[in-house]
Image (tube, rainbow, N blue to C red; front, side, top):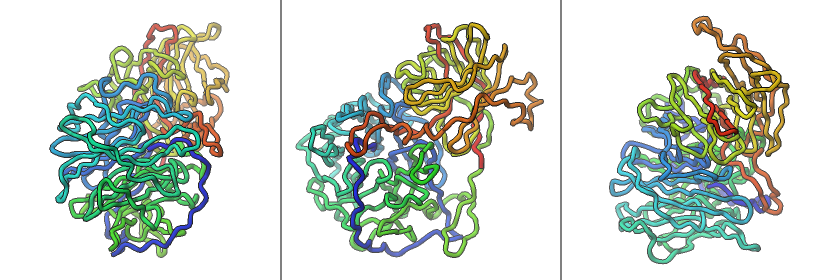
Amino acid sequence: MTSGPVLGTPAPLPVPPRPAATPPSAPTSGDSVLVNPVLPGFHPDPSILRVGDDYYIATSTFEWTPGVTLHHSRDLVHWTPLGGLLQEDRLLDLAGRPDSGGVWAPCLSHTDGLFHLVYSDVTNLAGAFKDVRNRVTTAPSLAGPWSDPVPFPSHGFDPSLFHDDGPDGDGRSWAVWMAWDHRPGRHPFAGILLQEWDRARSTVTGPAHRVFTGTALAHTEGPHLYRRGPYYYLVTAEGGTSWNHAVTVARSRSLTDPYEADPAGPLLTSRHHPEAPLQKAGHGSLVETPAGEWYLAHLTARPLTPRGACVLGRETALQRVEWTPEGWPRLAGDAQVRGGEALPRTVVRAPRPARPPRPVGPAVPGRAVSPLPAPAASGGPEDIVSADSGRLTPPWSALRRHPDPGWLTPLPGGVRLHGGQSLASTHGQSLVARRRQAADFDFSVRLDARPDSPLVMAGLVHYYNTTLWHYAHLTWDEELGRVLRLGVCAHGRYDEPAAPLPVGDGPLELRLAARGAEGRFLWRPDGSDDAAREGAADAGWRSLGEALDGSALSDEGATRGDPATGHFTAWGFTGAFVGLSAQDLAGGRAPADFTRPVYRERA
């Protein structure tokens, strides 16, 4: 899942030659292809599952609600967001969770007609200790109802469930997780543990087995178990969830005996290749198609510059896998192999048959088929809250609490937020936001608020965590009246780089224009005649201060510590969000109305 202390940068390891999988089959102009990342923006730690003809990917959500984001596909090419699985306080209460705490590395599985969801709820992650509550909940359908969560082994994180229900299986289930060791002089990533899980009693039974202690890459985590032929296969993440990340595979003929690592080294990594477009490749899970093809879902990231800021966070990609005659998995086809290590591909052949894929450009001799730029988002206003359920619609999230009429009320074409605590708080924030999913995008919204105190604020926020954010907000000044202010928080230090701007009464529009590492806030008075705005979406905007450094709102910008000693005080695992926020620091719950939210990606 997500790494604890990185105890220095591992030296390059000798990598033996990798036997080729046979037969190779790279994408051709006649193949349907998938384009990576298939889930752009903050979608880390993918757990992929097939039930019948349906594929699902569950990803981590950390301090954001609803917990555990779910996507669905029938061809591995086109993915539909289904929202979050943990939608109630009884399933997930994140109040007070630290930045990048909360829900880590879910595992979604299915057996005997029930979906099983296992996840970590992390209450502390800085320093030597990891305080974790692992839980499991079940449901007959992904729409629920989900059972009350029960405890799962919790002396570590990244739990998963393996059901030995294949043709040669005995039907039993097994809990799998990584062990954490806080003691000085010991590596904190203490191996992978395995213990039988009694589904009927919802508890572990029998002894725990330490089946794998990892390879020289270390930081062994994110375990998933599979059975194929005479072997059990253990897929793990190693190297830490940054530039040295990797997917490693080990196997054993006996479920509880020690597992032997693939002698060819990692199945997937980009650790030695900063020029590769997909970085941080690791934390994978496998799925088999109905036709017997295999695919690997894995975490990845796309820095703005080589080994630079990953403002989109950690994303999800898919690679096709084939098996060697010796029974080891390999990236399929003409996957680039450099220095003996297989790199992730951005264009991958989809399962046959597939629905019509995104158009691809003509093949260029000596180069892989390249995708055309993805079409920009439609740019139409989005519904934030479902009128039927009162829940947030995909792709919207809230921070550490679920929607409740006490702080959020649906409006036609928008939402009313009742002012909560400050952006620095881990309790009671009134904030709804969506992931940043492209390097270049615009987000705009209409705001109608009547602050009467400097303690009342509402506006548009570019948010990473409680210590890193940029906030264009409407508030009150004793001398100037209603004003726009631009607030910048950099690791807890607050500043306002522009003078307060008087704006008078009435609604206004706010906009964030993000272009790679830069982010610029703009504003304009709201027009009384929407028809006059037709075709003039970019007209009349005025800058609020200068462009800001958006690269600070990244995983790299949030992480604080010393890799040489392994001591870290803060982690960044979530990627940046853009959203709507309201504060009333006097506790009066002052309302702010947000309508016409528009997110538009720039091609």
